[in-house]
Length: 142
Image (cartoon, rainbow, N blue to C red; front, side, top):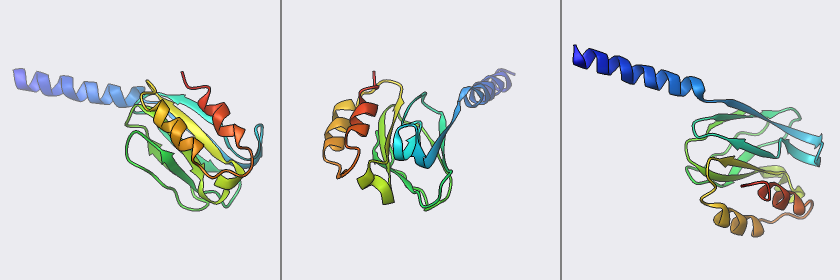
């Protein structure tokens, strides 16, 4: 009887934990509020366990992680990508074909324990245009 109750409690906790996770959408755009070749939103604050779906509103975009406290991820050209945020920290990402144009974004998951590493990596990214965009997004991390 005790093991059956324990199993039910564990199952309930797992179901509730998944039910509490949020789903976020990040659009991949050729033109948006922050200029040309942007992710919308460019900065996102999420909780551990949330998912982010990268949606190609305009074609020829391919999201990939640049800095992440967990496993790296990379999408396919012109296709949606869903990433589960399993690790707390700062995630910096880019669009592979448009990284030089400043198509970058930041996701903060919980406490930003790797913020210094993210800033160091960001400073070394080869961005020719819209260089201030990533700094603007990183400045929102608290």
